[in-house]
Length: 385
Ligand code: ADP
Image (cartoon, rainbow, N blue to C red; front, side, top):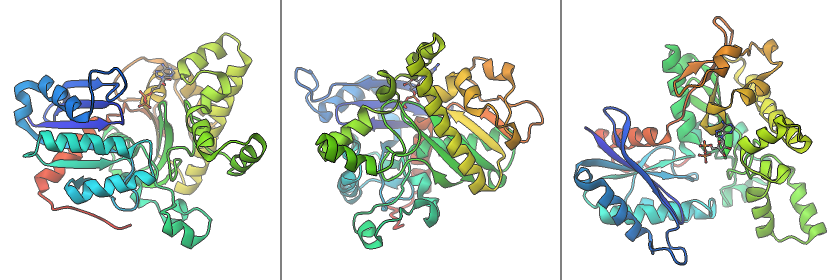
């Protein structure tokens, strides 16, 4: 067994997996919640980590690397990186770009480094896969000096998932990654779409923060920034209130009152017009990106669905792609309806574009990247981009 411990730490939670890289399977996995909350028996991440490590038992002694999921790598990190005190401080400093995410990751990193001081710790960033975006795709058209000073640009997120899924797609198709133009639709509670050209991310829908792009469970996705000024002026909302509104009370939740796609779809199926309208908006945005990314890629070889909605909901996949046959995008109804956990085709044989469902596995990708770095024994790898 080659055991890698994967930690996804939030401000009040620790999600973890002990993965055996030889089988690709999780040996132990779990989630600790309500850390540090009033009345919780788990006062802080240090204590939480000690509970987690106790659950690993003797296998904890065999861990060869710890992989930490970090949401924002900012301009500092273009790939997985060994964590030392300096890298930890940089991740902490990047909290200005990801105030909801990076502070929690740092708490997990500190606790795990203290508990497992002899094992190499590696940070794997959600933004890193998108470090290859060309300037035209990652630059916002605002004052250059202001943007530079505040590190304002498109970073993109879900990179670990987009990277894993686009590589698996090439392996599944038995074609070289370098030859493929792929669009990955990561449709979970958070959602993003990425154009991958020859294995490199060349465009992605999330931006400086995970707010931009598709209609999500609770996030609005794309919105005219003018809406922010308008609401501030007319409704007297503060910046923090608008942040909460757009990140936590918008998207499907804002449109329908529920952020869970299963409920929205059920309501739509039983004739609820609000839910039907929400699905139409959700679908409109997805198709907007498919069209844009095909234009950017200059064609398309594979279109891949992943994450909670993308892996499990045949009806929404079909509706998202209906009428796109003129682009070579077709779905075989029987293949699409098949309930399965396997990687699979849902396009008919011989269709110009391979439409696939590939279950994502961010933990496995984090474990592999962490182990690859340890194997290569590379020193700290900081890239300015
Ligand atoms: P996250 O984005 O939180 O990592 P997932 O990728 O697991 O989560 O996606 C979770 C979301 O997927 C849930 O919010 C749920 O709405 C949606 N989902 C899961 N199964 C289905 C389904 N069969 N139909 C529609 N939506 C689904």
